[in-house]
Image (tube, rainbow, N blue to C red; front, side, top):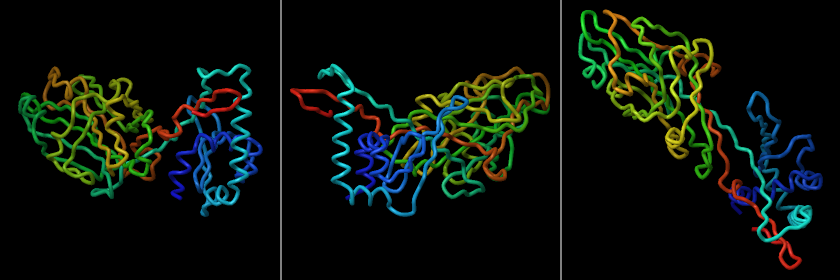
Length: 340
């Protein structure tokens, strides 16, 4: 038996049983006062509750194939308990008709990914790219192939717009972030996601007050950045832009991804690539007002090469099993109980 498939296919029924006293005994699940929200052949996940608008869960994993063995050895007793649980559940509704459905809500799992430190990274990389061309037109600087890139900074530029030394423009900088979600079951539903960047500093030398947003990025390599990656950023916004005034230099700046941003997350590839650039100027291709020579508007943030992951860029994906999201209906037909 493919136990991973079996536990996924019968997840909803198993959760019904696991959240009864009899089920906890049969499945050998700790009777801690928390609901079970997911169970696998060697692990069980409890819902701890909600705080600060976030759901919290804890997963208890075992080195042995604990629950797979329990189901095999106690299958007859477990099957009978499931039948009783379904009947009891159905009979709690005093007048159930074929049009009535009892729905069960399954909480999502939050998986957090960080870019790999160093360049090249193992599967991903983060860093910045730039095009510097002193005293060139806005179109030349913005549309250039790039003149520099970095992938090993502890912190650095994630956005910069700089004027030339005498006329026109000098520099535009953008940032890249790669995340690996290939360990997530590729049939899971991607429910929501946030991409968070921990700010380090900002400067408004040209008084342009630029905002920043998340877009696609398509580097030549998933594990390192080169100057030529500068022209691989998209212009479709993946979130709501954060203004210069609201960009924090002492905390995470959180972008909630929209449908386009969620679509950029791959559960099969080892790298889901995102970019950050000025929204109102760079992405919109709207030349800012030039207020003098050698003036810079910029923002800086931590990259993955910072110590530990406390302030690293991160992407938090909430996902649910496609099986567990199926609606379970209960109806009474001619005195019998049907599950559909």
